[in-house]
Length: 78
Image (cartoon, rainbow, N blue to C red; front, side, top):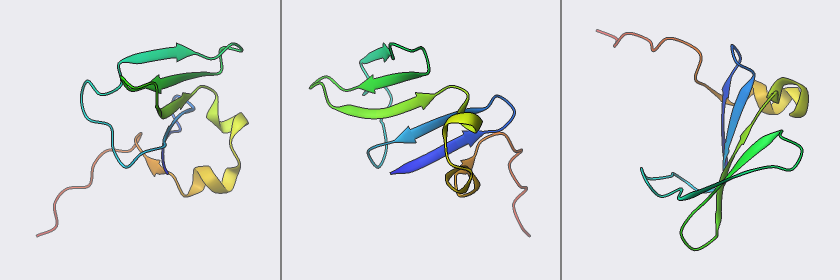
């Protein structure tokens, strides 16, 4: 499992598989309480979860260890 987190939008993506190839998530289902979008593959397997308001819904330790997507990439070291 891998978690990406964007603090500027308070969104997180929880990968339940190593990676999701382009086009692999063929069905997206909005959770009944509108807190998340569930991504499924063509076989009905859950690939990942896009979580809204992640700051409030996930444990701070999980967010602290998440891969941040809201930061600018570092320039290559020379």
